[in-house]
Image (tube, rainbow, N blue to C red; front, side, top):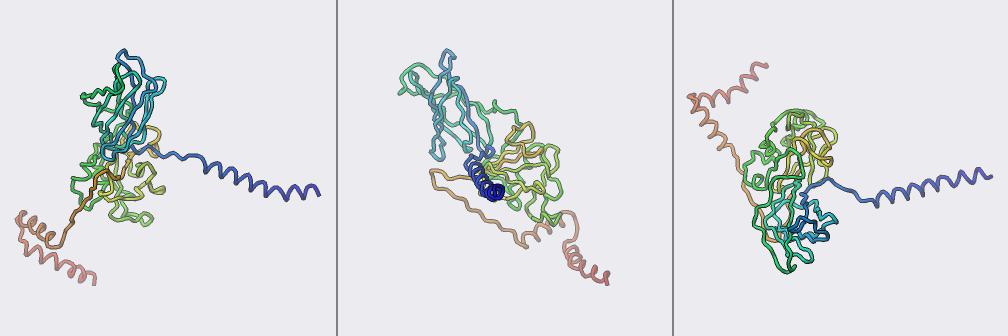
Length: 313
């Protein structure tokens, strides 16, 4: 009697326990890889003493969105996951003049250091810093290159394949394999070639990120979603010495960030035209420049399928 009652309650208890654990896991925050830039630094006074509880305001010039972070007891601040773009950064603290640095440029995945030295004075007094901000990433030892928004927007692309711009990064070249999209039926995506060798690694060793989320096909380590260049702001290609959040594979790390809205109306328009007449003119020019007779070459080209068919018969 006792054993039967106990066994009948176990399934219900197990289901309840599973439900509690599952709910707990769902309530836990999920952290993505870092897609944006990280701005950090130390605030000191003119005697090199740290300034705790200073207020750092980081304002995106394009969107007019601001983020405020305080300094800790060591005078250190850090603001991760900032959108790529230009920023105005303000540092203020009680008993000190407010210091402003304008036009701080941040790229995708950058780890930029920006320090402040505050002067004694009223907080309403503003000191405008005219010294250029450092462009070298002092907080990172990663070997990388950024394909900037200007490059994505201005460079011509035959077929409008975004990853072709990754070939402008030193150490990258087009390779072959399943990632080319036209060699194996299990990954058949013609026109979406992601077979790029970076730093001497194989194409299946690359890792793709899109706005901080994994964009890598789990079977072939190819790019999962291929975006139009019009939808992309910029992307970063890391070839070595990357940090832990970029450790999804041992090859190149390609971190793509899409465009966002700004405080001004904007848009793009383009025309793409490639017809048979233009192609014929290009071929004719190439043949004539080689000294061959274009009419004979064109006639031979048209007769070639007929001759092949006759040979098969």
